[in-house]
Length: 348
Ligand code: ZN
Ligand code: ZN
Image 1 (cartoon, protein in one colour):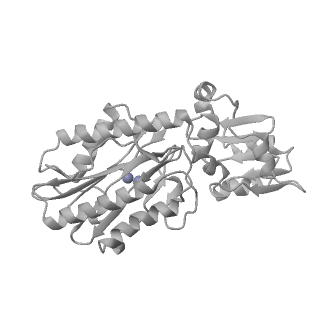
Image 2: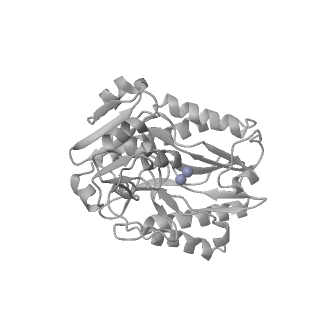
Image 3: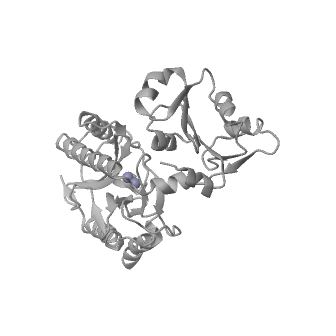
């Protein structure tokens, strides 16, 4: 998926790939230890003996099995190149140093930047299919966990039930630690589910995602135990309006920052701009957080095939927070909301 032209454009003779999601993206290899060397002649995957069988099965790249650390073996294959690209935003410093000390006179390590991440923003049909499946499983897991919900269980219990249902439904694993936050805990956008009992009247926020076939989904929904107070309904409506405004904005050519601004403007109209403490969304794929970032400063123009989340929220300390999040796809004409779960405030 990287061509000799890509290397030439970047001004390098070869490229060393050290970030595992990029290794997977370019080679199909899913193991936990691997590096790639991409050259005009082809791609070589370096891994260790634990992955001999797996590597041969998963990748079309040439496979080299290194005994011990990968770096010395990879380096032997790099020696004939003068300008070697490396992932400056993702390489670890010790690995960088181990290559640097092997450089011969006239050879150099050249920062390759985020070219692979930029390429990964636009999904292939196979990737979109995997994301669709991931989203479906995630929503099914939420529905299944909700039917099993009983007042009096803890946040941690409910998170465990959700992750159990994900696995039963065919997820590889959760794409991040499930967030279950009851009442005032929901004012913390990344609350960790604890021993707090979910009982009595209150708002329950759940943020969850699965990996399926390596691809992530991400969804936040709020349910309410008992009848919501008028101000809770108001808060919910304001966030839903912000989410709808952002979704309405999405189409090819619009920048990620413009989508963020649409959500922010809607919350400002309700006096809630300061309660919205994160960006509106993020790309997702082989990783749960990818480019683009639907934030104020991201000038990336949306193009068909991008998969992103749209997740404005408003958080009031001591009271609680609301976030509504869908996984969506940028289409040639606008946006397709992949997440099938209803967005009306569910009262249980
Ligand atoms: Zn989320
Ligand atoms: Zn998210």
